[in-house]
Image (cartoon, rainbow, N blue to C red; front, side):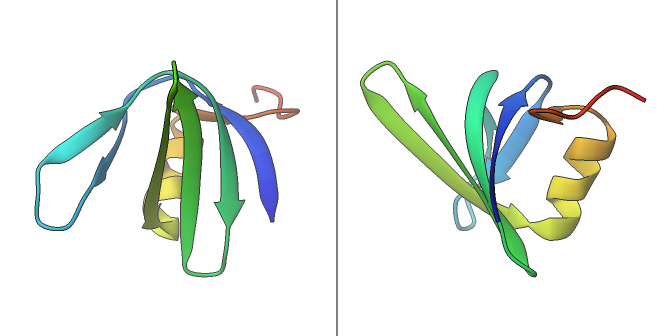
Length: 74
């Protein structure tokens, strides 16, 4: 499932064994599978993407660091 969203708080991912990298705030596209989520975004002329475990993604959504477009605050 693909969905538009916005990063509204601190959302981090890790490339391999490297340090956590913060995803900039703003619009993104989310592709969700049963096991993980891929976030994609643009920053100027550059494009970025990151995969994260579904549990981490759900935690970011619950804390409102990721806001799904069309979702209302509860």
